[in-house]
Length: 563
Image (tube, rainbow, N blue to C red; front, side, top):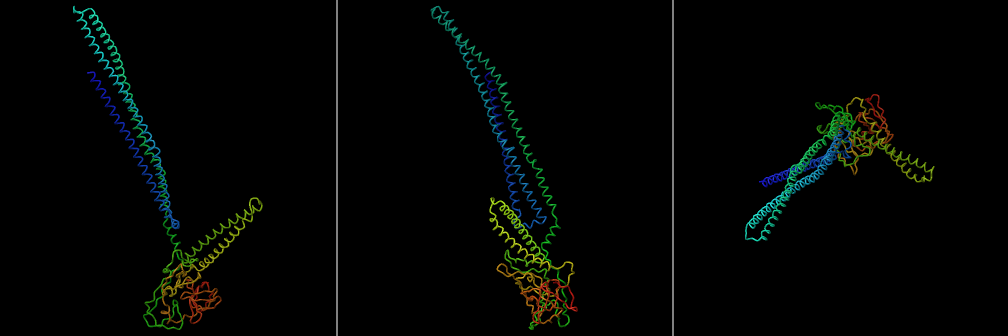
């Protein structure tokens, strides 16, 4: 019964160890599982940050689109991209902190936990094995004591039979007596040994169940509590890592909001107006031509006559097209990067801005070259005063080169300044009231242009054309002027003029003049920069007003003359 009770105790203890072993192993797996979760979260943060950075980089302004960012909306978008880049950096910080504060620490702690668990369960197995061995020794001494007692009893009974038998010699009786005494001595020794093992086992068993096993269980319990506490701290750190970057993320979002609030629609629209306004004045009213009564048409101010004596039948008025020249685009087929150096293909206001920009660039380059020249001059003075530091003549080639560069830049700047002065002198004055435009600009179609002078790139109808070269091709529809104006009477002379500069009129409707030539004025400048003149009965056309000194007759039609 004692053996059954002891076996039951050992079985329970063994089962408890197995249960604890399974539970602690499950606890370690929970830690590893959470560590794996944090690791995957860190990888997601890194991947997300990388994608955000790539997205921000993808939409960063290109070199050829820097002009777009003068608008407040584009600058706000650029600020948003930069803030998103900083926002991505905070996600990288999250991933880094998760890796350092949780993943690395939990990985190290898991290894330590496994070692501690193994040590505790080894101690438990050793204690269990030791008590089992003590029990076996006690059982062995007990069985030996039992056997010796039985042997001593049989020897005593044998001696008593021998002693009662009269037929047995004294020697046999003495021998039986000695054998009985020996057996009794062996039984006494076995009893003493059994008693010793018994006392020792009880003491060890008491220590096993009241000291060793509870101590081991206590260590396992503490280990398990530390594991749970460490897991809770890691979860708290997991939240703190995110909370630490919230202020900076908030600043990034505030930056995006501030950038959005800085958008000024009126300012952007004003930039568009300044960038694309042409400088042209709107065309005047279209003249009414009454065809309800038969009458001889007189030459209108809007007609361009080629009085060469050729008479052609009058064309149907349906062929005449009203043309509002400021709003009609040139039909140019330009190759990439083409365009004249003086920007004469642009409207006046745009041309003025481009020329001013080129002049500013030249001035900056000139200033850089002059700064280099001053620095080299000072270096040369130092070499002259201290020949051991260098040869003064070694600086002369570079100074000569810089001087040539400055001369070239100044020449280019003066050239562009001349074109700018020409444009600014030709731009219409905004304070002038709008005047009725000649019917020429209402009916005349665009004509081919091929002039080298910047002034005569502007055709009489106000449209701009491009030089014909290997880099630019001009496609402008043409219309016969003779079909509509051959039968009209020539315009009367309203004054005369003197050509201040030579002008090569290659456009249809223009007239070539030489410097100092005297001509007749038949139609004054209507504000578009052109004056209609006549050389003789067969030659008349338009000449830039800035090329002429005009003298109007007192009885002629008075108007402001552009010189």
